Length: 114
Length: 106
Image (cartoon, rainbow over all chains, first blue to last red):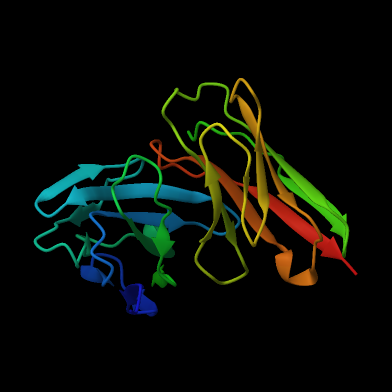
């Protein structure tokens, strides 16, 4: 049981490049989400999904796309990277049980856009 | 913005109890209160959650006000390893604020 696995752990992009941050969980959790955390700040919700085929926007969705084709995977796509997207990205998952289940977080992807 | 408010920082001495407050005045009747903590350079980890009654687990206790508009995370004996940022969130809201940075002094 690996929990929530994020890859890569570190990435440097040039402005305008695109890339996909991977997130996978092996706990059969229905709910998955992406957060970004800027230096010295709290986490901000980017996108979330309550099950395969269902996604929705969070607080800061602009510049990011998501899809959920399987229960296990929830990739985050940066369409055209900008320096403002330099941040640490965390993926989280949980059972969708009306609040009883806590989130399990991945260890994060540190992204730098130059 | 998140629906919870917390002090930016708190300090504690090692082996003393710590009470971390959280206000959530707009909480709905079915929303669970969750607490997480984030150690340096790590992702957040779940600490405890509750709905109406006070809760205890091996990590901490959660005291919930009778009107549910506030809660307090209690670390009974702070250790240096408890130094972290502590977040209080409403589970249905899914949004984290800036949290409380806890410093533990030896």
